[in-house]
Length: 466
Image (cartoon, rainbow, N blue to C red):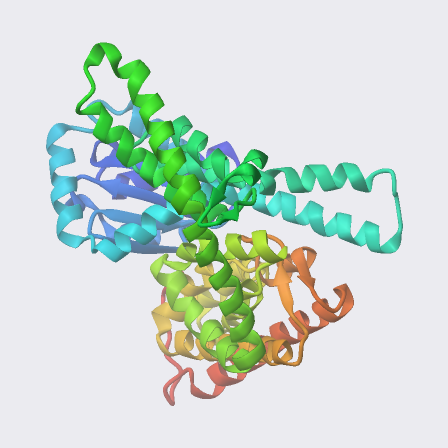
């Protein structure tokens, strides 16, 4: 679908019409591929109609009142802007009754775990564009340094690529306070303690702290504490003194607890994550890759894959790259292989083959939702065989990790072929790219073969899904 105002406006209008109208929508936002709507009355939503809107690649219903409309990268931003504008302009778009209905449904359907994962993801998802941009620049800078080219430019590229990661704790703190109902700048101020160089003069538990100790996990915990302290103060400090005392008490209490507790504890957890990831790959790499690559598609289907972002970010902070992302990326390779098998087996299903042709380029670049919701999931068995392809690709990459050839990514977000510019490892760019490419080819091959052989009943089914 073209990303132009006419198409975006038409798609937005069609989506809203089937979502019960602008007045039924209580919140609008998006991630990299999905328009996320919360509605007051789920009974007014035409789910089948939403799935049939041209350009819509799939639909996920979460917690009864939340709908994730899969549109794909690029398109989703323009359509979300159109939807948000129409919702804002609608008379009575958010009513008290609608808010009450929304809250009842949320309480009835939201489990504590799903709610926590969704809110943590909401803290980190807005940071992904900066992680991608800085990661690509870091990879380019590494190539220039290794080749000895442009020595006058590499220090500048180092500064541009590294500045965001050096201060990512501040952004995490800001977003955390914003998501959990605090004042964002206070969350950022307390989280800034984690990366302030002067903490090296502070002694906690008999040892000197280090700037950045605890990383994003420490920043997340610090901002959560700041939000709790701020809310406690708001209910107790007289109104005339609130503007002075509440920010001061929030920063003081949360800052001291961060210095004398949270940074140490979060640092221990972060170190444990790094140690566990290294042990997992060097000791059980093939098996770990098999499990991670095989289970990642169901996580994507449920929208829970973004809960892994804090782990990826912690590994990038510690080691310069995350060794988990290339393993998980193999799930997309299995999905591509399965889609190719479906394309060949279902020669007479024109609608499905058209969907595959349009979704395959995104799948090769690691955007799996179009193929999941448009192809494999409606057919059933190909979704399982796609997971088998992902498991095989993950086992391939994990096997080489056991041999000492680590493959990592300097940023999160891209996958598939798009991950090549972000690859890093301990054996040089050539070996790293070769291992990753071998994993992709394995995922393609096993996903294709498993789907072709076992993905259908004796007579291949047909589907009208688009």
